[in-house]
Length: 159
Image (cartoon, one colour):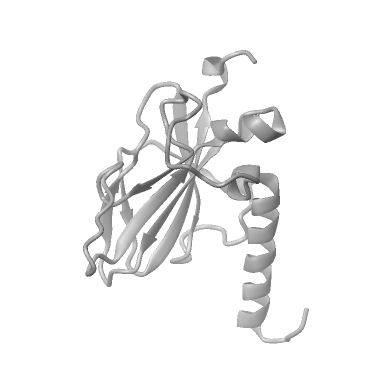
């Protein structure tokens, strides 16, 4: 560690956790350019952009929040296995913003991994993420939230 201050050490641990999370999820560093299309017939595009409503990006210049979903099924084309999908919400507005989560079906489950407001573990430790069973998420003001979408065990298709 380069500093002895508490905040510098916390930032170091946060960044280290972020790098490790990225390494574990190849969907976050894909070797191909993302196409914004469902070219593998997965029912989701490789990447999709959202605002408070799923799949409806608010491109107004005064908008202060958006989200993106990286579909883990696209990892199969270069890792030979499907991965969890990653959903990241950015709320730079000075008040909470209500987001509707984009995938709502009985074969998937959302997990809240991180929120930069300090309400969650800040190390990207997936063993500490919590199940999130709500249809909506109130993104705290000026925060980034990370969710992981997992297929339920009994619902996975055989490769």
